[in-house]
Picture 1 (cartoon, rainbow, N blue to C red):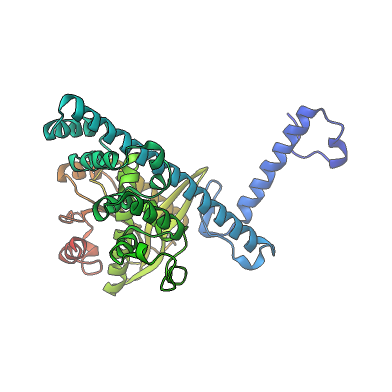
Picture 2 (picture 1 turned 120 degrees about the vertical axis):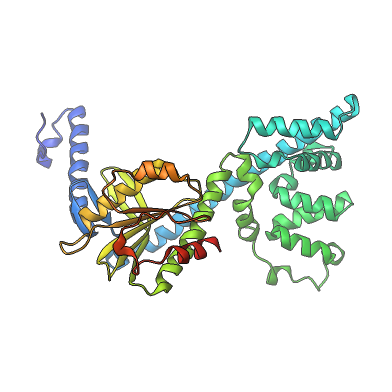
Length: 393
């Protein structure tokens, strides 16, 4: 086995394979040293820690510029990728609409066939909510309005489906529709702003001094881009609709629960959100981490925008074990976990928690809190009625 350190003046005489191996050894040693030098919250073990990012004060002078360039690159690449997906979806919708039109002309397809087609397509692609009968009829109208696919491949494919629907519903002249499509791209109009411009007859004021677009409207890479990133039809199309919505709901729930617990004034000290935990080569993120000064223990709150899954208990149990091992002090009580889910089956929750030694409560944030929290929590944590009221709003 090769020694871990070979003097630099001897390495040049090693065979190429051994030089590559030595470089890997050097990188391993550097990683080991980096692990020991990294900032951490609480204690650390050889393969587990709550890492804390270093301050920017001691970083190289060029770091800010590199960070700015990388953020810009990531934003541009995200936008390029999502706009390509958007164009593919719009063209697919045109193809579907064109097929329906052709079948109507040759085989007399009516509303019943469209309803059946919608049901069959949704069964084949359950993640796509854009295959409703109503939307299929919009696709048919879209293809009928734009019989030339080459025109659709232009500005129409570069704006969202919602933009295209606004053009269909509010305008009747093809040239006027194309004018607004081009201006949407040029000015980065969101769909609501596009509707306002149509209502204000912006095309009638083209080239006149009254136009104040540059001063009052956002650039092309902001307003519409933000809308494209949140377009439900787009995320239905690429098959990530449910996770996307779940993340948004979870984020809103995290915001609400954080405010609620802190405003309770019952002893919650906020420690962090999305608290980063490293265990060997895996990364985990705790939704909310508190310290309860009256109970003298940490409280981990996890939120899920989906029904209860027994796997959530294992995940939360991992977090509680890590906090007890790395953050808990000798005079602290065991860490408490609270899991909030979209809904739950009481018996499934009971089986999942049975024989589990760590204190974990499971709540359904649209139903009731499971009455299994430790007795000592009463009066220190919010009551069942208070949690039910807050989570139902």
